[in-house]
Length: 325
Length: 302
Image 1 (cartoon, helix red, strand yellow):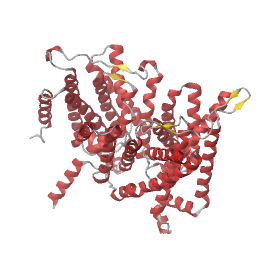
Image 2 (tube, one colour):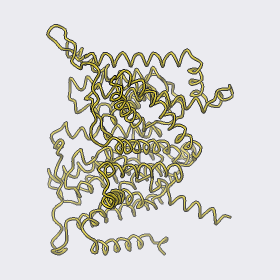
Image 3 (cartoon, rainbow over the protein chains, first blue to last red):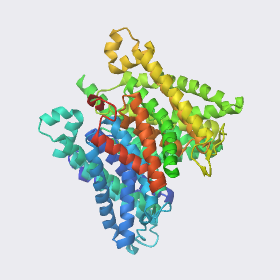
């Protein structure tokens, strides 16, 4: 039933999350919100890499565009919160469109390096123009949760609700897009762009479209990220964020949306696990500072060596193999 | 006028170090068709080893070649342990193109974390072996110190040695042949596997020199999360690509052009715009002349 009616599955999952958010403490709720934001950002990379064959190491820059656009709209025009999210999506999509025009002509490593240069270059603009508030950045305050939700409804729970709802909607929408003509075109381009071209698909336009959609999602994630920390600043979108998101996408498996939670949960869980280990064994600062990086990069290398398509795809392939035998 | 001369000096000085990094990236690209995003991590590791050697020997000019040799060995080891496995496992699926990128990125994180474990996350300080006060011409101090001059001369010497190896020795011929066509080179009796490892080793040495020289030429301070090295990686990549990614003279040319453009922006406009200008320059070259300054059209498709 769930296979045929994904909407039911998404709704059930949403209700489950809602019930869960009432049972756990504040820290877990905040982590839940972070997972939801990572889900959106990783999904945007999966769409780009797994479905249209383009690589981005600079998605942090697109998140930054979304975050800044939302904050500017909120601070200068007093736009309502939902509108700031829409503006974030549109601004990042525009940025992605421009980048996509260039990206469609680049392949593999060139694109990776170009997006890397963007991730390093873009935050410096914030320091150049006073409107972006320099190193301190801008405030981005979405306000208190509505009073109708009750007295003890905390700010973090409000963030969690907004982020989870956005993530559920984004994934549901993305799922449908993947099953549409556009999704099939992207898969065709990824598989073999010459064959796709011969089948009448405009390869260039499809790549640009994929980049635009992916950037829009990244912009949404950026606005949500800005929401949870109440500010946008160059420091909130470091190169490390871009690398983390690429890592999350690879751990999830870039060829399918099915594993998107894996990467997001891993990214949030690893610092948590390290904290536990460090406090249990009373390890030194050197361990506390470097164990997360070590775990993530080891996982990354092992994943590309042994399950390059990601765990979900690997399981599916193995199951098919067994059925065929 | 003095400002203009300073711009030229700063640009060429910075460009010469980017050139070493760009050469490292070109060598790796030519030998295995991989852009080594871990090059920054390897250079960082070599810089830390150089720091230890400076402590032990007390002489920077002994430490530098030793660090380059160790950097070369480490780079060769990475090729043998990681890249070969990767090529052996390589799938033809949709992820084939991104696997090497992600693997070298993972290696970058791995090296940084290991450095943090061993040396801690605080800055270490390498003393510059020479004065960093600029030469004086009459009243004016120009942006060229004995240190800058020595960096320039050592880079020049390394580029000349590399050029000699590539153009005049049989090893260089093998390196060029394997890059041009691995199959034909193999049929001609060249051990392509070993040549690949040597390509990586030379790249490791060049990267080590870039890291150490960049550090003593700059503030002298390094940490595992050093932004300097992320920039070195990015600028090295940009220089390599605008130079054509296949050609060593192209890499040097690209690096000097990048250094000059960035120096001009820094002096005449604003220091904070440097990064975005570097990005714009890369994009401009890729769109207008995708094969780079020196390069053939066919080389573009990875």
